[in-house]
Image 1 (tube, rainbow, N blue to C red):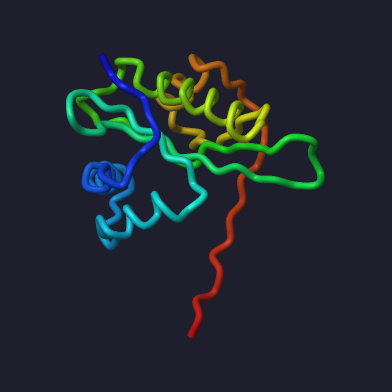
Image 2: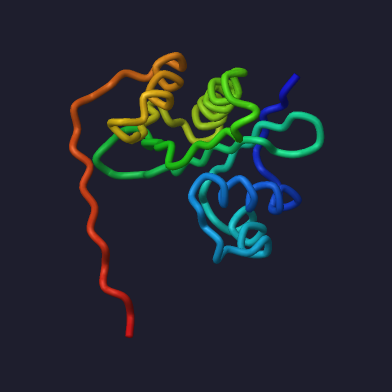
Length: 145
């Protein structure tokens, strides 16, 4: 039975491997991950089967005077290939929702996913998310010299 919990610094090696498989990122160290888990406001949930994390879900909470309650956003989610279609994504999202509501008072959870990523969209719909017609725009900022 999988366990869903907040990530801990000792999960750094597993998270590093999972992120390399997910995002192809190779220039982040286990120490960078440990530091982020202890100092960053990012919320990281892991699904653990056995002794290692096999999936992760990241979220941010945004506070604005424009809204009565904080707004939360899922920023990343990945389940290792051999562990897919076993309810890990739904389990992490349910854990995250409870955590965001009870700790931060958030009453909405947002996310963006690729228009072509039908598997992710299916998982999110099963977890109760609805599709909205929104544009996602990005801009690369100039590097410091």
